[in-house]
Length: 418
Image (tube, rainbow, N blue to C red; front, side, top):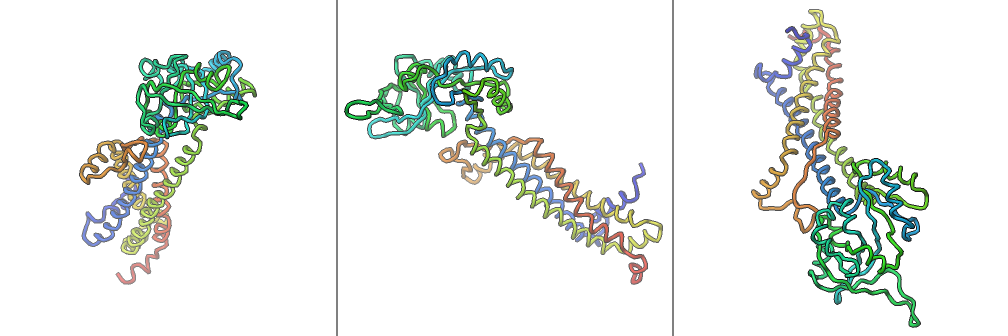
């Protein structure tokens, strides 16, 4: 197959180190440029994959405790008819589960230890249809939440901080108080710890307590549930479904999806991801523009060849094409090598990182500090494709000036001293 002359000569210049020793140094610089592009692209893919994995891991642990969408009274009072609200919400095709709840801040005390917590009143059977944690515990721990028995299930970290076990008594001080002749007296109730849970998310493990919804209604003096939790077929559609429900359910209720429950955390992760993308792209840019020096040296070294080609009838456009092919080939090779290296590490990071930890006797993610103890990774095509395209674009842009300079070489001047 006969390739265009520009492509043949450009590829020969790219592999000049294998042709002879004269161009060995130029070939070395070209190899360093390709290596720099490959390492930059690989670093981008690995870092963004780890950030995606970390975000997914935390999101999944968070959504094992909370629902995808919550509907509650705007003024914080009980819903007039939560079953009617749930039935109306279920008309949305995405909604596949609904459960009532009561949520209120309270203080939990045992002896001199006191903690501020979110007390959530739930119906164990209905709760299992909206959260993964309740589905796992419905036949064990949550089955012990019997109305009137005043049992409570604590987050694992909360239970450990209060030093309580199953069967111990704790006291809840509910928000608000009871007015007596002696003044406002806090509403206190003693409950029995019937179990604990570990969701793997520190915020909920250390600050959430579950009681039966009937007991919660009595404790907080409510006539019924304050809201309804909903589970969706696709959690990524939560924002759109929430907006649709807000319109259909009317202005008397507030609809909040899971992306708004921890909005600050998700916004911070997205900001970090954008900044890391920009910073690591600069590494790729530096490596790509190293091609400028490589091509400038090649043009200087090949001036006699350029002059001969011009005298044989090659146009300035053809000369420019030769060196653009050389630079583009280096960019393509470096980018492909970086993508393969990055994906290879990203897909096997759960094996590579533990091996490094064992070899160095260190722990990169101690469970006592971080939410997770292993390095997660989730490569996404939405990150990899833009990385590859940006790398190729930078490499192409880096070839323009040296190629234009080669096309301006005058044959007579180049051959004068040959």
